[in-house]
Image 1 (cartoon, helix red, strand yellow):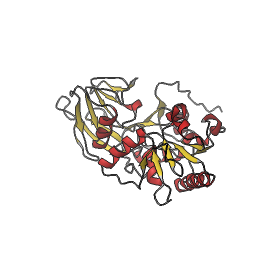
Image 2: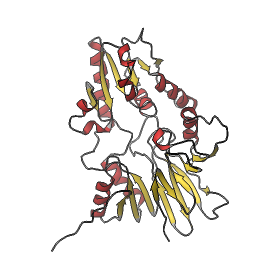
Image 3: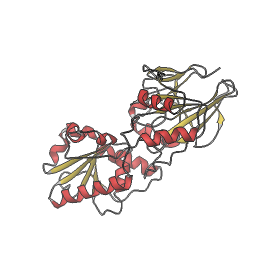
Image 4: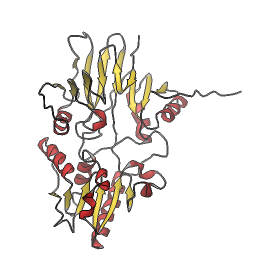
Length: 334
């Protein structure tokens, strides 16, 4: 017997009655990380300590009734007395701080690994990804096409720093768009040593302080102040681009930090002066490498170019199918 996977507003495993990254409120769900599209106000959650702290900051439990099952990375333990023999362990996903993959072992179904969002490349504000072996791997495939091969991180960071310095030299304010959770902290940490004064948008500031409570050390920064922001690099979320926040900086140059910078016309799509291919998701080579590391018997792909990547895996001799999509089989004609 194999694992039964149901795709609704997240993944549901009926054999153990747990959800994985449910996006609507459910009885109990694993939460891989604290981005809003991976969590909701569940009654019972299984997550890493880092994700728990960030989830409390972003989605407070005002009723005080949420049950949190905190698991340290790499520790295998029984899932619950309700399902004897089923074990669970969490492993760093490398996406943002606290992000986790979950590995479940069922005596009748074998092992299952669900990645959530992940990346193999080392980050400056996230734990290094670990890839345990599993019989069935359910993996996020946002950049599941070969053209999404990211340039070396150090090269991209050098380009971002050069953009900031050139903007400041022109008496303008460089504004870097990065999600308030994860990308903002990665950018802030990456600017260490560049001697660039940084100001953080209030949302980025709030979550950076949670990171600091978790032991992450950042270079000096300050809260955004429109009266003194000249001469600073400003880090804010992409949502700030459609608010009045930018009006506080009339002389500015904006840059989006995203893996989608590899797309033609990305600068016009994001309506920015520049785009830089900095991502907290696995690129195509990382996705292939992850399958090599986990050595699954079967792969299920999810999000992004899921069908494309599943097809490429089948061409490499790996059984792979895209969840929630039509899977077109390939036939070789004599």
